Image (cartoon, rainbow, N blue to C red; front, side):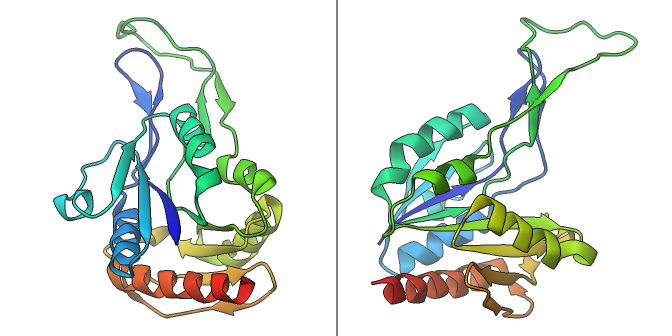
Length: 212
C-alpha cells in the first residue's frame, strides 16, 4: 500500500521571529512510519518542525512543512496518490489573522487576532475515493475521550479515529481506543508507541483487505 502519514506540530507565525505552536514531538508519526515501512508499504511522511531520527530518514520519503498552509498544499499534492492517510500531525486550531512584518518590539503587551485554521482531514475526507482509507487522531481529556472522539470521527467523515488521553503527549507509551465508522471499537491496552504503531498498521491492513 501507499501510506501517507502526517506528524509533528505546525508553526503559525506571529511576526518574522515568533510563532504559535504546540508540544507535539512527532514520536507517534515516527513509529507509524517505521512500522509501515517494516511491513513492506511505500511510506511518505509529511513532517512538521521537529527533529527527525536517522532511522526514519533512511527508510521513508520525508517531506517537511511548517505552517498549516504548507501542510494543506502538501496534502493536496500527495493525498490523491495514496491508499491510506494516517493523520497524526498536531495542526494548530488557530493562527494569527495578520502576519506582522519584522520583529515586534517588546512592550507592555501584544494583542493578536486569531482565525481558525482549515480542517485538513475533513477536507481530504470530502474528496477521498472509495478505495482510500483515512485514519484520524483525537487527543482529549479522559473524562470526555470517547464522546468527543466519536463526534469528531462522524463530523470529519473519516473511516476510523485513534483516541488518546491528554497524558499521551510527551509520553513514550499510550493507552488508546480505536473507533471505527461502522460502530466497532478496539482497545489494545497500554503499550509503547512503537508497539502501538505496529498494531495500528495491522488493523489498517485488515480494514483495507475487507474493503477489497
